[in-house]
Amino acid sequence: MSRIDVRKTHKLFVNGAFPRSESGRSYEVTDTKGRFLANAAQASRKDARDAVVAARAAFRGWSHANAFLRGQIIYRIAEVMEGRHPQLVADVMAAEGLTEARARRTVDAAIDRIVWYAGWADKLPTALGNANAVSGPFFNFSIPEPTGVVAVLAPESSSLLGLVSVVLPVITGGNTCVVVTSHTRPLPAVTWAECLATSDVPGGVVNVLTGDRAEIAPWLASHRDVDGIDCAGADASLASALEVAAAANLKRVLRPDADEDWAAHPGLRRLSRFIETKTVWHPIGV
Amino acid sequence: MTVVLGISNSDLAAATGSDAALRRFLFGLPGVDQVGAEARAAALATRSIKAATKRDLIDLAIRMIDLTTLEGADTPGKVSALCAKAQHPDPTDHTAPHTAAVCVYGDMVPHAVRALGPDSPISIAAVATAFPSGRASLDVKLLDVHDAVVNGAHEIDMVIDRGAFLSGRYLQVLEEVRAVKEACGTAHLKVILETGELQTYDNVRRASWLAMLGGADFIKTSTGKVQPAATAPVVLVMLEAVRDWFDVTGHHIGMKPAGGLRTAKDAMRMLVLVAETVGEDWLTPDLFRIGASSLLNDLLLQRQRMRDGAYSGPNYVTLD
Image (cartoon, rainbow over all chains, first blue to last red; front, side):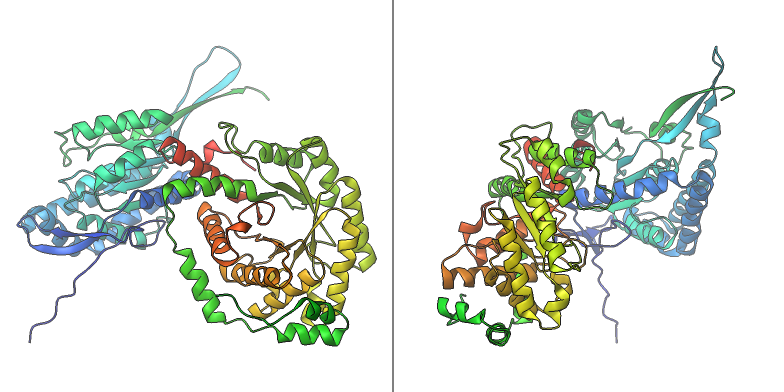
């Protein structure tokens, strides 16, 4: 006797919990050949608003946590992903239509990238900050600080490696984020959200919305309580509209690059985009 | 769904004659169907409100707010900041209406009077009668009320003696409300039931009637110091009492939920409850108030959202 399928309807990941979309909507997700995989929640602008509230609430704790602890927590994400390696490989295979060997390499690369970013957490002040030489009896320090709440539009095709490549630089610097996943390939992101929920990442630091980015992204771009937006997953016309909306409260904007190779070494470009430099003067001898 | 109570004006007069008569009257009130009240309140909470109506209701809710600060750490500076906010809730938008009142401790009333100036359309409400516990002798409570009124309070928020109420000394509670009402003079009297301590909806209904028998102009749910405070079913039960009182006497009694209302959505739900229970006559700051502090900021954020078409954030409202 054959077993009855356990069909899944996935939910969003907001504030460390898995709520349904406020709109009650979901949509069917298929593999690259059009076969049904699962239902994913279709987030609405109100879900995005709730996610921003959660990210803002989490910002104080996450940005004030000491950098070494942040690095340890990020490393823990990699540990949990390692334990769910087979599931992530299966998700990436189904979502991206890859062979098992290539899917395995993709998941390995994603985990390695997280470990790489984990190492950066407590080295940012050294790499991006400075003790400046000034003319006068002052200490003068430039210190990197997180920008705040960042909206992240994850790439459409690279469903896991691309996702971690845009989220990790944001949270490593101490920002919190609301990430809108790939629309057609959301399931690796859903599994990754489950990894985040079982690692030590505080609720609200990463909020994962599945759904149509053209519907949600304009609300995030115009949101006055969002401080930056990474448009990686937006096409050129959406990205320019988002950049215009983002100007209202002077958000940091990262433009998309259609030719971005997510497997390539990331460098510090994304990490430093959502970092502000605070410079303080302190009199010597007081 | 008006409950036919079969109560007449003369019954009310007779009920207040003695402790036994009052007890008989209060226990003769129909019991509250707990499941029904909770289901009705929950059903009304799902009512959808269209954008144009919401815009009007947000402004109405702002006009109904008793902007409150009741902390041990209150200072004259905090009170004058509160008054400035009550006058111009949104400094970036002068079309935002002012609140109905500010609500402060009695000793802060002179500072509120000074901050608001003469002829201000904003009332000053003072909590009195040993707020929030109500644990003091009647003389002390009356002095507390007298003090606030002399200092210029237009409204007095008194607390009932829950200890006396819960141990069944209803006449004592009634007489206390009457004495305070007399001490208020021309000031309006709001009677706080502190529903979070009354245990049952039946008690909420009895306390509501008791307060109205004592001469309350408003009945108010809570001090804000005890949880749960203004839950939807409690507000529903109290509004039903207000409606029934109107049916019997023809007098409009006001209602003020306070405590635990933080979001614009909470406020909308309260307004729906009012319209559906007592009717739209009560949708005015003269008959319905919302006691709140952080609620105002959320209403302003929603207001800005509707004005600008973009979500606003806490950086665009004042820190309180």
